[in-house]
Length: 256
Ligand code: MG
Ligand code: MG
Image (cartoon, rainbow, N blue to C red; front, side):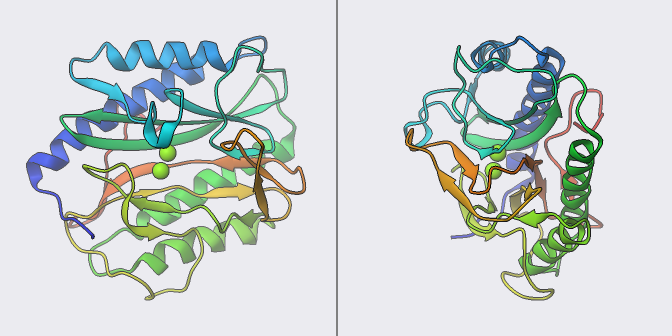
């Protein structure tokens, strides 16, 4: 079922979204060679729980054990923070974070370079962010879910990167994952029609090589089948007039 949120619910989701975005900025600041993903998870959980009523959405969601998903290099999403996963110069780290506040969720992700990364890797991050921006711009009243996917796909494939098909964006609200599904590919004017007050998470996962993925034996970590690098950027947005409103913006208003 697709739910339409009230202005009050949207305000709560924006408050949750600010905590998410500030958490991601804090984690990005702590991301450097020699740091383990478990340390970053600790920083995030402490920061989130420092806000009255806020808790990490991911902890316990479908049994996930940690507050962040941390996915390194060819890991696409759902990597589990661990003490023995230590970042190295030239890695990329995808950080995904959700916060629940007053029964409502917000969800955002970004991919950060660890120290200096190669030029083509930097380009993967930039193109994925541009693909997200293009998708967000389509989240307008009267457009369709297919307009979002088409915009994301066009940017990614024009850069000769590929779009992960099996994992998609989603509606979000009182449940972390709600309808509709929001694929990162599609055709204009196809799929669910967007109406005012719908809240969705748009989250392109873009691979440098081929689009196929698989899940590791830990039952969580999703990796590219060909071992190529993958980037992930995500915002939670409300479909509104005159245009979409991003709910996962950091306190300073700086886009993470
Ligand atoms: Mg997410
Ligand atoms: Mg999401």
